[in-house]
Length: 149
Image 1 (spheres, helix red, strand yellow):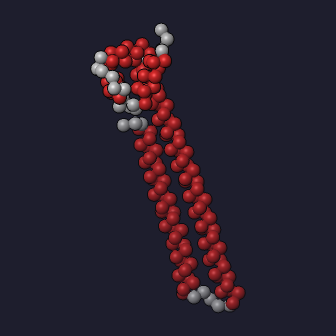
Image 2 (cartoon, rainbow, N blue to C red; image 1 turned 45 degrees about the vertical axis):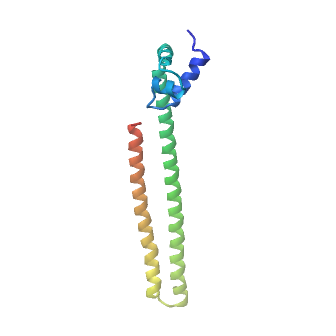
Image 3 (cartoon, rainbow, N blue to C red; image 1 turned 90 degrees about the vertical axis):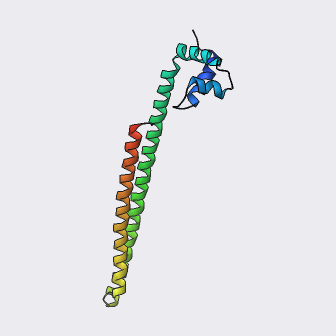
């Protein structure tokens, strides 16, 4: 027996209901009577709707997980790149500050040393934020690996 276009439309609507789907909900969504559930049950049984819908859900979950992991990797790479750029800019600024003092023969003032210290402190704070983000991403990955609730 071949799945008719009407049965196939019903199957697609069934899948669209999501993981909490049921044939009764499908009949209700379509505004059909309770008696129509019997027809849906026959189609579901004949064409393996439950197994097909489960396979669809698993594939959708795998796609979502892969997309989330790719986005997390991309964000992490962008953050590392931005951090490295800031670090290089700050290191260059510190070198330039000290070179101005060396070229003028004046030792760095306390204010210059404080400014250099602040720049270095920012690096440590950024590194801490990255560690925290990595922990959050690991938690997201663990939750995604558990699958849909």
